[in-house]
Image (cartoon, rainbow, N blue to C red; front, side):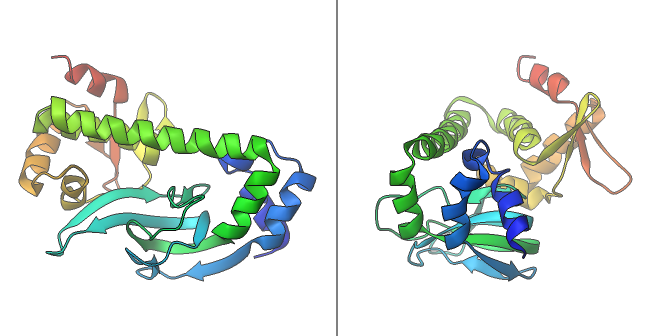
Length: 230
């Protein structure tokens, strides 16, 4: 990957968005590029956490696995996003698996060197904390959904969340940029594939969710929101 590509990609990442080329220069100097093919692992759960990644192209699946091998899909990350969001200013391990869903070009920065730059640029540190704060709010929302909502409502909340994280607005609908199986959707909220299938069929009948010619979800986000208050 050319240096110009690294600069262009990093400049689109939220925490680097407003930095000048001069301010980006020390970050570019410590950045490396890596290409990962489909199904490769970027890192494994419990590997030493020593790098932070920025996606130039492709998609990365983040998931956790328990001792029985049961998987929980955390998220699917796309171009412009960084991961993981843990490990800054402390030693630790990668909290999940990162598997390549589509061939990916990644920008890799050693965390220890990145931390030194963060200390040198307080405004950059503040931006990082804002990004981490948004992740905390998202996690709180997921926990609240599990505690306060039934399975049907949790699935609707999941679809609404995917509009934001993996959706592209087209007219008054959101088109999901990633195709999820019912099993993957179920793993995201700890429910059964059958429950997801029943809910998806129901919201399809109500025309809240449709499929395009490629089988990709088209979601009427505002109408789906109203479904929570029926």
